Amino acid sequence: MTEDDAFIRAIVDNPGDDTPRLVYADWLDDRDDPRGPYLRAERDAVETGDIARLRELAVGLDSVWVARVSRPPVGVCCDRVRFNSRGRTLSADDIGHLERQLGGQFCAGYRAFLMNYNGGAPAPACLSYPDPTWADMDIDVGEFYAVGAPYEPAPNESSEWYGNLKHERDFLHELYQISGGEGDNPLITGMVQFADTPNDLGYLLIGIAPENRGRIYHFRDYCHFSRDPGHLFDYCDTFAALLNCIRPARNP
Image (cartoon, rainbow, N blue to C red; front, side):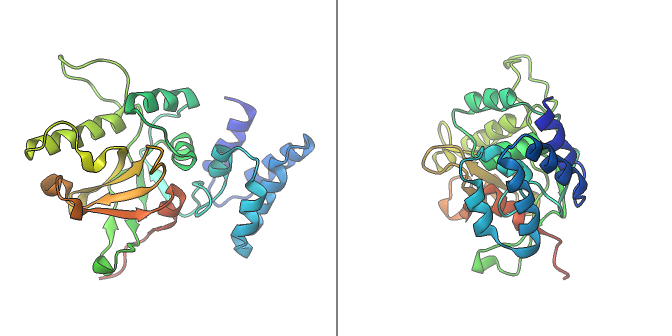
């Protein structure tokens, strides 16, 4: 683990505590690293809401680093959401290996999320939903899939490491074939599902192709309507924006 990784891990593992953030900023300032001023500005932006200024300061900085240390809606470092039962700590090489397995590339925000948390059950676990036809419904999230979660392949399957996230993607294509489709489901080509929404038998997916990279989709009741484009909903444009939508369920 590098010194940078250790500082980021301290920030992630102590949500709501500014001390690790300020210690890291001091360490960066001592090295005339431009990330120091950004880190201090990020802390101030939480209070002032000056997101535009924060985005200006992020220009020229590594986008994955920015996402790892910034809170939603700019980044994925969550203060108000906990992720229980997370997967093992991932390296950039681990994530690159999975991308090659999937045949796509993750956006900076999702890559940062995997490095910070590697999946887990979110608490709170409900999404505010921007579809007016479902305005009064909460979307429950069961779990964010991990990479490298324990999975024992069947005897006739490859034993190559790939993790739970890829296994779930293959499962979606199997459901499509069971419903009468052939090959991979064209409705989710260029995407990979990263979480399930168990109450509606659906999934959250993220784009990994050049034309949709990082965009978030919700497929309602995929288990019964895998071939129905009317059940695939364009949710939001960034992974950080998705995390910003997580909140406690509304009272009945």
